[in-house]
Amino acid sequence: MRHPRELGAAEVSSFLSSLAVEGHVSASTQNQALAALLFLYRDVLRMPVGWLNTLVRAKRPARVPVVLTREEVRRVLARLKGRPTALIAGVLYGTGMRLLEALQLRVKDIDFGANQITVRGGKGDRDRRTMLPERLKGPLLQHLAEVRTQHERDLEQGAGWVELPGALGLKYPQAGREWGWQWVFPAGRGYVEPRSGQRRRHHLHESAMQRAFKEAVRASRIAKPASCHTLRHSFATHLLDSGYDIRTVQELLGHRNVETTMIYTHVLNRGGLGVKSPADSL
Image (cartoon, rainbow, N blue to C red):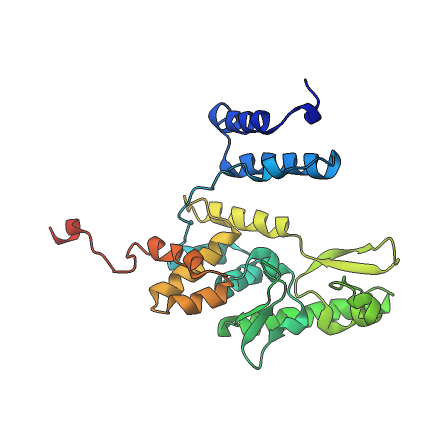
């Protein structure tokens, strides 16, 4: 019960060590505690934190990602009844996007002529392009036709606004009601933005898709702890299994370093050399 000003590197190190040794917390929890202490000393107490920056951070252990087989993907997609959950799952598996990246797609980001989708502001705030699967073009066009009808109804009622990135709303005051800026997967209900008074729609919340996917996995009797992100892992693994080079997969996933993509070679159970177990030759 001493004031933090009276404590230093020794006490902080002891506290962080006790989290791991006595509390058996994960590396991410330990790093979160260290980040909180950094904020406390640097931004609240306004104390120099040079000694705190030198503390060794715990490293997260490498884990092999959960991957569904092609047959398991088919079973899960078949259990996702009705749009837009089935369509979103198809986009996740067909493009390798993260869940939030798919939910934040705007109408203008889908290029049906070039068969590609532009992912805006992905991880690391970087844009990238990925393919538009042929089998999704028809369902997406039908879905967008329904979304456009809904948007036109909203416009007639004085609504139809969406949130714009950055300061674009100031530069283009009417852009928030234009069709190209609308969400591909809008929420069912609107809301009133308090500062501007605009009646907007947000994109579908990720929890709705996560809940639907979890129920589909359970109904498919798949024992793997699969989540929406598992479709991204499955996308990468199945591409490598089909013979595509790892650099191509790296670009499609938006990984900054190819070593991040290399984990999927381990999931394939063939590594870089395609090693075959001696047990298979008995």
